Image (tube, rainbow, N blue to C red):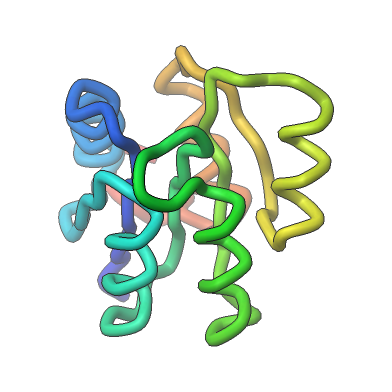
Length: 127
């Protein structure tokens, strides 16, 4: 099965770091978005196995984007990846439909665990 992941973050550096980590773990189909609005457009036209979503972004924040994606795809697996590790952000993210929350900066091992948890990626090369 071809795994397809969407990485959403307004920071090009964070997107590149996460994309590089995912590639090391055998994921080769990775799309990127720089804001929540762009994430919604991509999620409408692509079938992602997993979405990594930042919260604080221009145009549309991650919480609103999660709510929109869940409306048309209730089964979406969204993992919030934020530097704002406050309880309120975690609570709002889960209430909006996120499956998990990780904080930046993240270790590659944490990304590996997320892949295993939500995609069962033990059979992928490198995982």
